[in-house]
Image 1 (cartoon, rainbow, N blue to C red):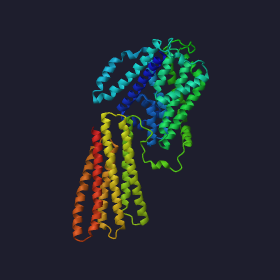
Image 2: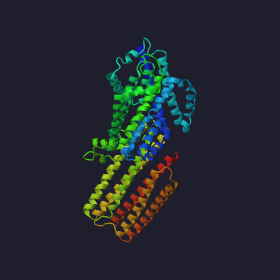
Image 3: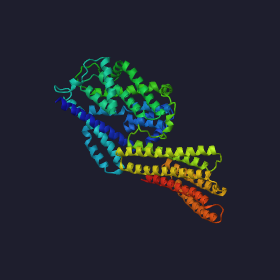
Image 4: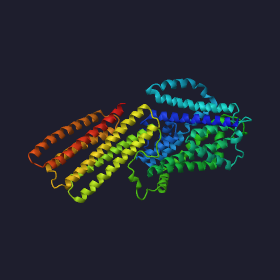
Length: 561
């Protein structure tokens, strides 16, 4: 009987975890790029940053996801540490919203009315436009259903009856030692299941049935703040220095808050209970579902007070994190060219797609730098300078190859998360973009080797040929700039038409130079080998422009879908 009761309890908590995950991921899918725009635009000062963190967490119903998103944006350079810390403080406040939903279920049995919602959600999932909203409603229904089952377990004495499991979960001695143990257990549970909702639901169930006192429940809930911070630190461990500093700042903030509250929480709880007219000294095994409201009120009050205390200490927190997490001596981070995605931060497919899109723009910037260096090879005459530039181009080629593999592997990981059909199409387009950008790098590499052949040749390119090559380079550079513009913005019909126009101009100019080359070789202006070397550069530029246009088309197709 006890084993069955434990299995029922674990089943309820499992359903709760699934519901919170489903609702959070669906809400993130609904929000899409708006989450990034919110974080970009509403972080002008520490107070708006705090409100932004609370808003985003309330929107996606996952403080862990909001924290990891913030850390990844710091890693990408989209947010500073000073901007990120108030967002993380706000995430703790926004995380309290789900506690009030739980408290309402414990007192009003909202789960009795969810069945029409389940039918509506089921119908919505059959329509592509409403699929994400339907799944988010499903998630909410699963949360309420799991909480309703927990309440039912309490009502039919599964927890507190003669054969119940209360005697295995009860706290024998109410003192600071037992509270400390519950706090660390709460931190371990949050870290293990990565869901603060499970912790809150368990605490509400045990307190409302009288298994735990309000003090034990509060101590258990306090551990959630530590567990969430450790989850963020683990995810940021493989990221860059700014991301690790952000995670450390959150850990210091949460640990400091838990420390002062743990020392004063009996007084804080008594004050809160006086305010809401509740007797915290009532006997154990006395069922009172109002305790769910007390826990929700404590959770909200503590996080609001903690945020209010530390919002003025953002700069000292930033200095402390900077001092504790120093930059590596050998600057190993420069060896990793990925700025927006890391191996350790992979949340929902929607978030990952946002990061990958930014990384592709970074990839395009890298290949543009490679092209710029390649152009210089036809302008320098100093041997040492030529060798340095050629070595740099070779280095860029290695970087481009590594970035292609890293981004493709990252997108494959996103596919493993079973994204929606729309996201799968977007990922296919992004893989095509990555492959074409790598081909641009290959063309630059081939041009660089042709430049080295010319530099070592006794019959070098003529001034007229070099002039034509630089004209072709200018057209290719314009095509690269248009590609980067289209990758960066949502809709760009005029830029797309410009890209097609530049491609036609490059093809037309290539044909003109090819005909002119035949004429010059026949007239003996230069020999055949020089003409072949010259056309190698021109043809590579034309092939490079084809790859640029393919990237443009892939991105435009993704935007239309």
